[in-house]
Image 1: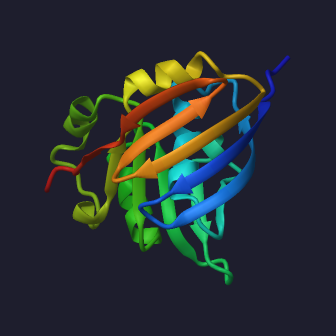
Image 2: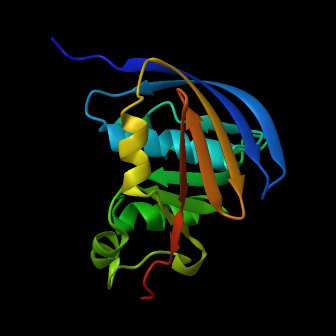
Length: 182
């Protein structure tokens, strides 16, 4: 018998001061059985950090190689942003950069190790791909509160991330890094 995805409900009071986004979000996200806690939490944090009109988790998610984990489309359905999670290979980032005007990568992996895999690989407009590493300590802390129904208060100010969950407060910053030139 195949395992099915687990659906999580997350209520987020989002204050992204850097981007001027202040929203109450009710997020429903399915976690595939093959998806690690770190990957899932990175996907949730990326969704919140990137929140804008037209954002959505892709239908295929990690099971469909043609879809990004998160997509932003305009009202006509055209791509605005392709948002990858984890450690996609160079060919996938190359495809993303050709398909979408903006590409962002949020990873829970060690950036130095990830970058080694991209050395010498062709990635279209690599210099324009925005890359962020989510601190491992933050993911470990949030994993301790992972439940099917969660509430977060999430604030981003001057690139610093503040998360309040279940009476605990956590602080971190996404580490920005660049893809290697070809």
